[in-house]
Amino acid sequence: MQTNELPAYDMSVNTTGCCPKFNPEGWDGTELHLKDMPVLRAVTMSAMHIPLNMGKVFSRVQGHIEKAEAFDPDHYIVLSRDPSPWSSEHLFAVSKPVPEEEMTTLSGDFVTKVFEGPYRDAKDWYDEMKNLVRARGDLPGEVWFFYTTCPKCAKAYGKNYVVGVAETL
Image 1 (cartoon, rainbow, N blue to C red):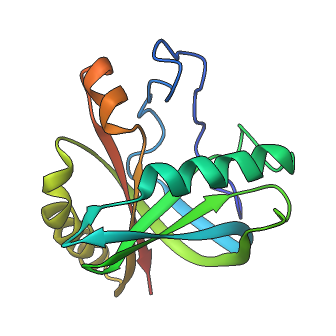
Image 2 (image 1 turned 90 degrees about the vertical axis):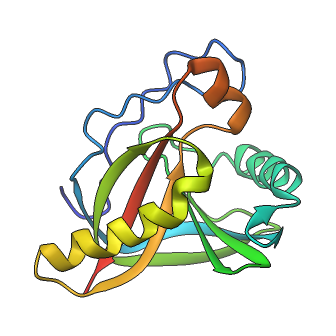
């Protein structure tokens, strides 16, 4: 893929009125090359990796993104990782700075893998992503996850797709 290009995220099917139904086509095994891609950084609280205030934080962030007109449906991803059992970090792709939120950039080379299953499997997916990078002959860096739908929408659609995004060093 070209620098800062992301696979297509089809938002056309949204029967829940919340999250669109995720179409995994184009997301599995993709190489991402990011250079100073603008992202909004948000932090949520957790208790032993169980999110405590994710809904509140995501609602605030999405509201600020929409107000700033920084949402780009052709360039959509939210990357999440747990730097500790007590907090999670989230990077929202945006098209321009969003007032009232922390802005940063993301650079690096990444490989993706689509998983389907319950969120509790993320610890296994994390190890699988590290091994995927090693099998390619690279050193693994940070591992992020793109949770494509909220738990309520995953249940409604009958599939819980999660995209692993591993940095290659």
